[in-house]
Length: 141
Image (cartoon, rainbow, N blue to C red):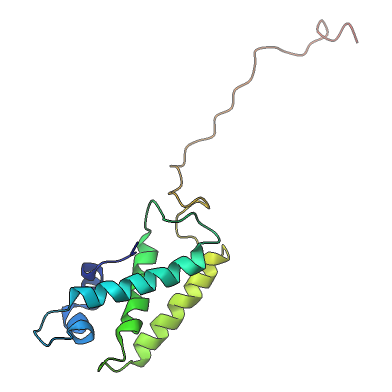
């Protein structure tokens, strides 16, 4: 399961950059299979970090994982005629650090340990029985 889509990549980095990263046939359009493969590889990397903490596949994909997936995929797309920049490298390293924090429970992504979105918070409700401890109830002690 991929945590991001081609459209997520375009939304995060803009279409010109995604074309530069993934237009292997030179037609001015990002090659969807190329991007899909990079996103799947990035998602597999994410899974390797979070599998110890969350049940996979996740029922809900937090926005944070989508962002991290795009940063990792962007890094993985570099090298085939696309030069890796310092920004791309730094965002990749930051993504890996964030995954370590998620794995260690130090960065909350809005999921319970079971991998589902947490239940909506509600107020605490307390109820008590109508029985009252009084001298009549304690007379046998």
